[in-house]
Structure formats: structure tokens, C-alpha cells
Length: 504
Ligand SMILES: NC(=O)C1=CN([C@@H]2O[C@H](COP(=O)(O)OP(=O)(O)OC[C@H]3O[C@@H](n4cnc5c(N)ncnc54)[C@H](OP(=O)(O)O)[C@@H]3O)[C@@H](O)[C@H]2O)C=CC1
Ligand SMILES: O=C1O[C@H](COP(=O)(O)O)[C@@H](O)[C@H](O)[C@H]1O
Image (cartoon, protein in one colour):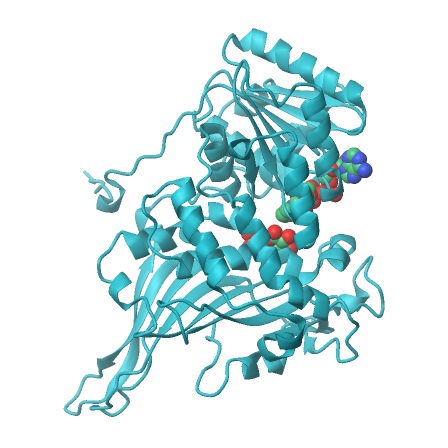
């Protein structure tokens, strides 16, 4: 007889947090994000029983479509997306049955009358509260008008149930437009109703940064300038444009990755201990770190930031196009596809400790990592015993945490070698859920901890605004790295002597 041993790491794992019954209204229901990420994430939650019987999805798009046509699109999305959990039994049909659709121009008041009528119909059928979560999954140019029209139609009013708004990224394209967007949203919504999404915060291993820092005693005492030499944060992508060249020409890597995802990772590593584990306490600390970070005016940009753009190269043994050869990209484009930046935090904890952040497209592999690199031991008592210890959070793939330290090699001499102690997330034996599932559920529950607050977003824009301004000028040196390499040489030089980017 075979006996199955239970995984002890799974004991005490709790997953279920049930929101009140609600309708998720997705603007941009026919878009790429909805099809590839949102519908699979919602389906996963629904199939898992986390959304309850009263849950519905209402897709909103500019084209007329019957409810049945939309349900076909939902089925297609779920069966083709790589993100969909295994579909059990008849669940595809059952889920399609809770999907509804309203078509109409996003600037027309009639569209919102139709949405209001459909919401009432759904609510009457479910017989429970009039809760609705609106998700803006459209081009950012439509965020303001949709918000305004929802307000005009009375759909933001919480008189009969909660009403919340998720706003996709990019949140503005610079500080001024982010302030204007925040102001426009606040004309209609209270801050507690607004959820600015950054999907990196929904990643399990990103949340683990705070859990490891503040759920253990051993790390915080050394988490400061006395012990840490520098910190490296890398978000490397092997992909190129994948048909998004038009968007990327407008955005570039600073708006696409640095201002949001990388800044979020940076704040989680650098923030002080929050007074409580709640949305405002955590966000207060994140804002404080951003405010303590030394500004980067245009004149300093060339000293602390490196821009890159990929040219043709070889990736996974095949020829890869250069950025300028991508669809909808100008043949003389100066849009950066790589950034490396040195941040300095002028507070007591971090004074003198540089934080190096880098991200790029068409690098040799997809990998995201935060590495805290410690100082060398003060004395080299043993041959080979002066290496730096490194605590690395592997955000994706192969999620986990590792600690590099020196150990005696076997034998009669005291010769030290670097070894790695490795914790792999798969030890829990649980599938990691999509960040969108986590964030959608949090928004339905009303927990904004993992959503950047107004001041956080603005502060992050302020920090990158000098870089954006400096790099709005064409650069005759671009492209300056070949697809399939780790970016321009200047990114190595940015680290200064006696430091190098980790071999990932
Ligand atoms: N796709 C991704 O991987 C990611 C996307 N995002 C963000 O999510 C949002 C949606 O992105 P994505 O799905 O890629 O975008 P898409 O370009 O695929 O389109 C989104 C939706 O908006 C609709 N739309 C586009 N233009 C108009 C218009 N002028 N009037 C009315 N509707 C319009 C589209 O309708 P139609 O189908 O009719 O064209 C579609 O339903 C954006 O803010 C993006 O920055 C963020 C992270 C990743
Ligand atoms: O928001 C974005 O993120 C993706 C990278 O996300 P990941 O979860 O796959 O690491 C990036 O490719 C895209 O350009 C950007 O808009």
C-alpha cells in the first residue's frame, strides 16, 4: 500500500477570502489585456469558488456585439490563453453564462445609461447588493472620459453598494499628466474608491519581500548602511515588441517599467518598517522612501542613468530584429529599450548605499531579481574568504530566495568558496496564482495595500522626470546593444569599480 505524505509546508495555508457579490465591469472587453490576463484571472477565482454565486462580468466595448457573441469571445479567450487554469467539468459554459456585454462609444452618455440598466438587471437577478468594480482596460487616453461619464450617470455613487475603479497603467505619461489624471478621477471618485494597478505588486514573490523583511528577526538588523554595500534590481525581458511597437514608441522603458514596476520593487526593499500591515501604513512608508531619494535633475542624468536601445542580434540561436526594424517603430527612433539607473536614498538607513535598477527588452533571458549585496568581511582570515554575501529574491521565474555565503571547502586547508542556500517557492507545492487574480480579489474585498496611492505615483513620476526630459533628445549612439546581450557597456561602468551586475 502506498502512503502519501502530506507536505508539512502546506499546513496552515489559507486561501479563501470571499468578497461580497459584485459585478466586474471591464471597459476594453475586446482588448489584449482582457483576453490574455483578466478573463483567465477572473475565471480562476470564480472556478476556485472565491467569487460566490452572485458574481457577474460585464464587458464593455466600442463595437456592437450580442451577449452570445461576447460569450463566444470569453470561451475563446479562456481556451487560448496560457494563463487559464485547467477548466473543470462544465465550468466553461457556466462561466460564460455569467458574462454580459454592452456596446457603445466610451464618450457617449447612452453607453452609460445602458451600463446602468444592465447593472440593475444583473443585480435584481442576483438579489444582493449593488456592488460594482469598474476596470479601465483601455488606452490611457480614455481613462478620464470614462471616469467622467460614469460619474455623470451616477454610477460612481455608493448609495446602494460599493463602487470602485481600477485604473490600468501607465498612469499618466509624466508628472503633470499624472496630477491631471488624479484630479480628474477625484472629481468623481473618493481616493478609497480608486485602485491604480501595478501587476508586479500582485506577484507572490514581490509580496514576500515584506514578509521576509518584517516577519523575521534576522534580516532587519543588517538591512542598512552598516552592512549593505549596494542593492541591484533587475527586470530583464527576452521579448521584443510583440506587436506593441506603436505603444512602446510613446512609452519607452522609463514609462513602461522604471516609473512603475521597478520603483515599486525599490520602495519595498528600501522602506522603513510600517506601523501596521495595512494599506495606508505601508504606502506612507513607500512614499517616504521616494521622498528621501535624491532627485535626478537633467544635469545629473548622464552621471546616474544609462539608456540603451537594441540593435539586431542573436537570441536563443536565432537572428533577432533590432528595435528600429520592429513594426510601427520609426527607422531612426531614439526610444530607449534599456535603462540602468543609480538611486541614492538620503536617510539614516541608506546614506551612501547605491541602489542600481535596470530593465531592458531583448536581453538574453526573462528574469526579475532583487539582490541585496552585503559588505566584505573586515579581515580576510582565510584564503578566498572575503567575498560579499548576497541575499537574492528571485521574483520570476524559479521563484525563491537564496543566500550566498562563503564556506570551507572539504580538505585539510582552510580554503573558502562561495556556496548558495536556496529556498524555492515550489517547496509549498502550490501553484502561484496570477497577479491579476490577487489584485482583482483585493479590489473586490476593498484592500488597497497592493495598489499604489496617488502621492506614490506622483512621487515616482517626479523622480524619473529629469531622465524623461534628458532622453527626449535624439541620441546618435543608439542602438547601442545587440539583441541577446545584457545591454550597453555603460551599464557596467555605472556600477563603479569593484561591483558587477549579477550573472543571472
Ligand atoms: N496588453 C498588456 O499586456 C498590458 C496592457 N496594459 C494596459 O492595459 C490597457 C489595455 O491594454 P491592451 O488590452 O493591450 O490594449 P488594446 O489596444 O488591445 O485595447 C484595449 C481595448 O480598448 C479598446 N479601444 C481602443 N481604442 C479605443 C477607442 N478609441 N475608443 C473605444 N475603445 C477603444 C479596444 O477596442 P477594439 O478591440 O475595438 O480595438 C480594446 O477593447 C492599457 O492601458 C495598457 O497600457 C498594462 C500592462 C500590460
Ligand atoms: O507592464 C508591463 O509589464 C510587462 C512585464 O511583465 P511581466 O509580468 O511579464 O514581468 C512588460 O513586458 C510590458 O512591456 C509592460 O507594459
